[in-house]
Image 1 (tube, rainbow, N blue to C red):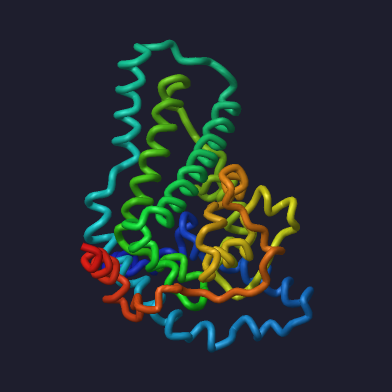
Image 2 (tube, rainbow, N blue to C red):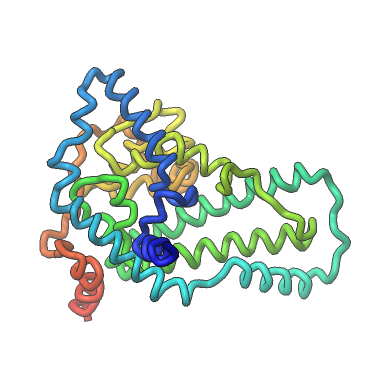
Length: 304
């Protein structure tokens, strides 16, 4: 049994039971419920969401294969080199003490510390995710690797994990830097007795977003919000437009669309009804797991 558990961990199958992952069974179940309500309101058959042309499309089948290979690469090659949150927290504490010296801890109600820490982690994480995502599009070197994600011709929840290992490494590095930095600052001022507002170990804000249909962002369900809400929160339809051949310059946000609005990259879902996914670069090939892994390097070599 331990070997089975270890094997499922390496293959990424444990994502179904990990609330930190979008494929957690609870999120998939809530998504299914939203899809049923959506279909009833739109008066379309629920079976239309199970179209074989989508779920067994060559692009979708490639997603399933790549998910397993990418999980093995992450476990064997990336994780041993990943920067840890603990390390960044320690470096931040050392920096704070060097700059400000030892300080008596600020004594306030713990509930306010927990609330502030939860909000700070969420806001800074979401902002840094927006910034890195935008850089993946605007820096030619990084775009070569981010194209792997945008090469999907149909969208399913597994498409979220069609990400090149280099991009995985960068986003893991971003997470460690932001989380460790904020944690170090809070420990310096308020002490080590920190906690976040969470549900089953997940930041409560992120949990709510996941449970309310985050997986629909990579799906055939074009669920848009009304315009006012889409100026604050990224809707599934907004992210789907980002995946179109014409939408790669807008809607970089993770959860909040606030950053897109502040930095001029927001597009509302009401502005566009036509969705054609994939890449404009017809000479770029991402038709196999091998090509997903190696094509970015081939493109870089051609530019030399």
